View 1 (spheres, rainbow, N blue to C red):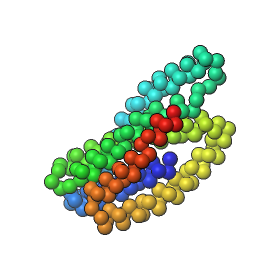
View 2: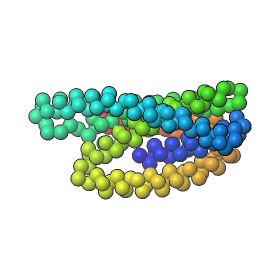
View 3: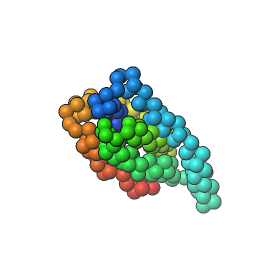
View 4: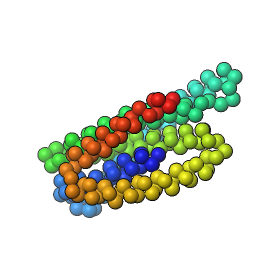
Length: 189
């Protein structure tokens, strides 16, 4: 979970560098560039009925086979989808964030990123809750503390990275880093 938010904070730090430095937007206009991420999160919420239907199918299957509950991995459907889309959105951002390409291209990459972040967060929380049951509150509070500590440090470092290095290579580096974790939901389910 901390890794997801490290990527999120790095991505949003890159937005400031991309839209202020490359496209010459002021701070107010750059702030509006975060709206596609929010729009993507809202659209990602539309996947909830599909996920509920898939999990309901797994619950019915477990009951038919005499089990009281499903395996925790049935909560990873949105993570399976999201794990494949995050590298796509990062690649899209990294290779379209230049003044010669329309500003709408990297904004669309932000919307795609927002679309999957919700699914990854919800899937990880559901998996933790299903796995740890009675200890869920302790586990989630510990995860939140680690997440904020790790991602907060990275948010500061990301500003330095985006200031000193080439934008498309930085975002592409983040995408390559995320590629290493692409298959995790598939191997755990």
